[in-house]
Each structure stands twice: as C-alpha cells, then as structure tokens.
Length: 444
Ligand SMILES: Cc1cc2nc3c(=O)[nH]c(=O)nc-3n(C[C@H](O)[C@H](O)[C@H](O)COP(=O)(O)OP(=O)(O)OC[C@H]3O[C@@H](n4cnc5c(N)ncnc54)[C@H](O)[C@@H]3O)c2cc1C
Image 1: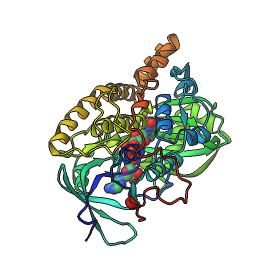
Image 2: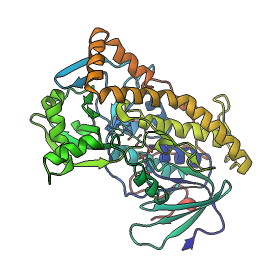
Image 3: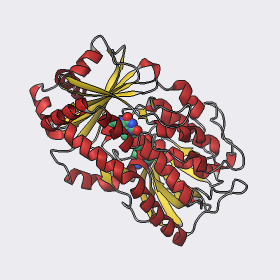
Image 4: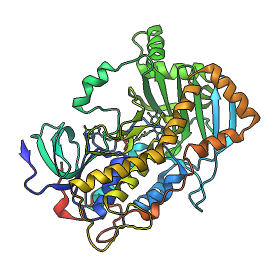
C-alpha cells in the first residue's frame, strides 16, 4: 500500500455528489488542503428527479457555478401537478424572493455534478477519481483511509485531520454491506430513472405521481429532455416482475407507470426514451448523522428524505454550507470567515464541539423536511389516502402550494455567508485546464 506521505490532507471528502463537492469548494477556498475521493468517472448519469429548488440558486452562484447553471438548466418550474390514476390537480409553486432566482429548474446530474467537481478542482482540491473508499480508521486529527482504484492501480492510504463522509446512500461502504443485506424488507424502495425526448409534458410543471406501492415525478429539464424518476416498493416490484419473467426491470417499471397513471401515458405518447433505465436502491431514508463517531457527514450520508419532495440536493448543498460554517469558525452568519489568511484546521477537541453544533443545526434545518416528505410519501403510496388528498387539493389548491413552502422549496439560504475565496476568487476552470494550485493536485 502506498502512503500519501507524512503531511496529511487537512480534509478528505468521500464522494463528489453535490454535498461532497460543495464542501470541497468551501474548504479549499479557505486555504485547506483537500482531497475528494470519488469512485465513479464523471460525467455520469444518476437516479434523480434533477429538480433544483429555487432556494439553492443563490448558493450555486456563491459556489461559482451559477452562470453555467443558468445557461444549461431547463425551464423555470412554476407549477406542480399531482397525478394519480386518471386524476390530476395543478397548483402554482410559490416563488422565492430573489429577483432572478424565483423558480427552481432541472438540470441533468451528469452536468450539475461535473460543474461542481470542476469548481472544487479549480478552488484547489485534489480530485482522486475514480477511486473508492474501502475503509476509514483513526480519530479526529489523525484519520487514515484506504482507497482502491477500479482501474487496478495499487491501493493507497490517505491521511487527514478532518474526515467528511459525502458518499450518499445507495452504495454502502464495504463495512455496511452485511448490515444492509440483513435489513431487507417488503417495504424497501427501489428507485428508477429514465430520460425521454419529445414528451408532451408541459415545460415548467413538476408532475408528482402517486402510485399504488410507489411514487414518482416528471419534469422537463435541460435539452428539452423529460426526466421520469420513481420509487417502487420491493413487494410491488416483485409482483410486477413475476407477471413478465425475463423482461428487463426498467421495461417492467415503464409499463407499470404508463398503465397506472394517465398523466404518464399522455406525457410519453410519441416520446422516445433516451438511454436505458437506471436503477438504485434500496433507499435508506432517515437520519444517520453520527453513523461513525467523529466523522462529519453531509448530504444523503447524513440523512435522506423520501425523494417525493425533491429536496435531497437542497439538503446536500445546504448541509455542506452548515458544516463548513462550523469548520471554518463562522458558526454564526454574523461571523463569516476571514478571506485574508487560511482558516486554521480545528484540533480533536474543537472538532467534537463543532460536531455537536453541526448536528443540532442539521436537525433544526432538515428534520421538518424529512418528516413532511415521509408523510407525503406514505399518502402517495396508498390509493385511498391519495384520493382524500386529491379531493382536498381540488377544493384548496393552495394546499399543494403551501406544501411546497413547508417542504423548503423557497426557504432562504444564507449563501452570502459562504467562505470567501482564499487567496483569490476561484472560477470554473475550462475542461482541460490544469489545477490552480499545483501543490494540491494529482491525476488519478
Ligand atoms: C428517484 C429519486 C428522485 C430524486 N429527485 C430529486 C429531485 O428532483 N431533486 C432533489 O433535490 N433531489 C432528488 N433526489 C435526491 C438526490 O438525488 C440526493 O439527495 C442527492 O443526490 C444527494 O447528494 P449527495 O451529494 O449527498 O450524494 P450523491 O449524489 O449520492 O453522491 C455521492 C457520491 O459518492 C460516491 N461514492 C459512493 N460510495 C463511494 C466510495 N466508497 N468511495 C468514493 N466515492 C463514493 C458516489 O459515486 C457519488 O458520486 C432524488 C432521489 C431519488 C432516488
């Protein structure tokens, strides 16, 4: 095993989804030496509905990818339609309060995640990709982690003072796989996604699908591509698959969605699927903030909401802001970190106190969203409960609008209190540009 030498990284971040890259950008801008370990090569498609709530747009600008996002993302999302069987109710989405960032938009994860990771690289982070974390040992101040290259390079050991887990939720770390196998249940949710060209879905509308034994969503994103994503219970999926043995699971799911929901049927009439169905799961919704003592976790690694509200990327980006505010010594918005010198890396005792404050802030900001998403998901998966919700939404369409508000869609985020760039503002580097701070860089 080769070692990265006596000088540890200030922080190692595992995973380059929105949570990992947003953390890396902020820590690297504050002058920390940062390594990001990502197991997949980018760009890569990902199971996700791909809607970014309006609350995150100022944040994306502060992270340095706002202009690229504005140029690439799909149309402004101004309304929501709840679809179940042959019924549909439409309501306005609430606008957010910021001039040009009033509405959410959808952008493919192959683009969004690449933009964020390039920005982390441009800010000075070392990107190890594709490399997969195998194991973590040590304690705050003295972490070490073993990483493996899928390309057969010799394994490596990295050292870090601060360890950040941003590995998401669907690919369990090797140590968690046995536990995951033992915890199987009929209610486990599996997630699916495909893109469609030339759908008839109204641009600017988010369709929320209530299914018997699942839920989903459709939206028109970048390049006029309609993303269709859904979650289906294990027992429902097994029953569907047993009716058409040998058929690919994506085909089974697509047939089910078209059969079950008139809104999907209508939207996909004449549409053409772009690429294969992607699958992931089982989902592990809930809070796992302190899964490993002393390791800071962000995004889905910290806690996962039922994706029916489409708030997972908000929680990923916003938890990265909360964490970096703690780590960089700006625990209150009135104390942004100083741009003039690198922020000191906290010692073990300081990290413990930061962990406590971060966990409290995380629970305050995200638990209500987790609970609302769970309640909505359980209603949407039961046709009788959905019928009551549709009735109520028809009578009071403001209910769906208010639901989006409660779900965090337009909750202001204090993006202006992100760590300022150190030593100078970083911009997204062109695709082939070399690293901006060579001492921190290496290629995989
Ligand atoms: C069906 C569905 C629809 C959704 N729709 C929406 C939506 O419309 N809007 C929204 O905001 N959210 C949505 N979400 C949720 C959103 O996709 C997630 O919440 C979000 O991706 C979490 O970001 P993250 O950075 O925490 O993790 P991820 O995006 O999962 O990134 C984790 C990264 O870590 C890497 N990784 C994993 N294991 C290792 C390892 N051992 N070593 C190194 N790297 C590793 C992975 O390759 C990955 O790139 C949806 C989810 C589902 C399932």
